[in-house]
Image 1 (cartoon, one colour):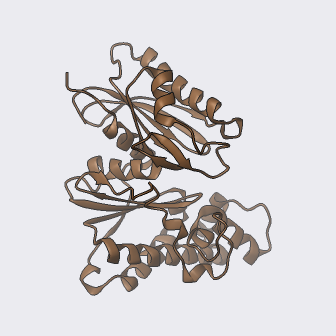
Image 2: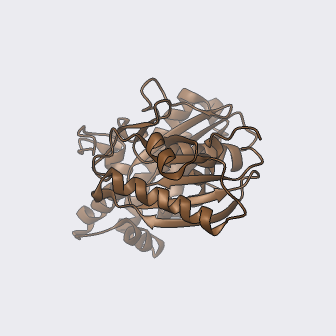
Image 3: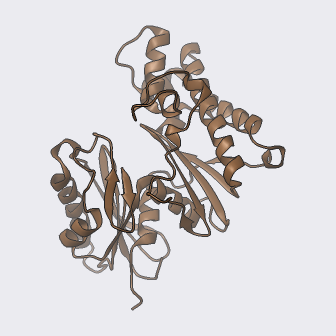
Length: 307
């Protein structure tokens, strides 16, 4: 970050959030709108650009110097394009995210995947601040990870590093995954998978995650069992990632964390059982920034030139 205010965007499958962020990392203004995912790239981009312009208009004394963007999908930060996406955002793959948003807002723009953005936020402003490395896992509609080392995100040769949801999981057995494979972590640990698991066990239909969380909070045995299954699956996978990367900090966020104590206890127990003995003192922490994590991370990559 510099001492200048920048704009930030977090483009998700259901919601797009925008903020103005000052040089200290404080959000000074914010706005949100539903993401018109089924309407295609032009509508998604215009919604995002309009949010940024509305914030700039409301804060005329604080004109943003640049724009940083965290977006759903596989994002090639070098080219500024979306190189992979699910059908939640129709025809999103191939979108010139950086070029289009720069053109529509008039701001120099940098882009990154939304999970990487959240990891950067935690590493620079959250519980990982001051640590050389951070492993972040987001467990929500999907499962994604990011590793930040000395302030930089590991994106990989093709920009797909962090797709933790597509690691094999013994807890997933042969369940179908959203990627077309089988037996992956996302097929057992993501929100829709856990809601479906509750439905199977309880003989219920049209169950959603927040209902499972509410039932677990009230002590429902089926809901607690589902929460524990998800927690164990995530904890084991996270332990394997920690063995590979040896992070200084481990942070977990996303909507599935709302399953509460049973989920967290199962996660931490499985993590401890999986990691090498030297890593058993590693603490797995919840995100400290909540929904602002991706916005602050996006703000931190905004390409601001020195005044």
